[in-house]
Amino acid sequence: MVNIPTEIIKIARPVHWVKNLALFAALIFSRNLGSEFLFEKVVIGFIAFCLATSSAYIFNDILDVVDFFCRLKHIFMSNGHFFICGNTYFLQY
Image (tube, rainbow, N blue to C red; front, side, top):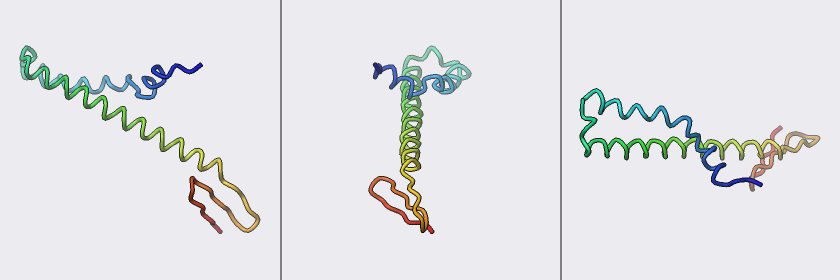
């Protein structure tokens, strides 16, 4: 049985969120790490970047699945190739 929350976390690729920690470098090098206001802004930015990158990964995965199934529905005809992709039909000679 598939565990939906675990699969959602896996497809969001949290391993790549580590790159977003670079946002905290500005606080560290400007010596404002103790500023509660700036720290809160950087945390919000970190969360926003994580959501943005995860949504891009998920969107790309959806496009890959659609492309994969379009390739599966490729039907060969004697006079050419007939493509069925969703509700769109293509005839290629």
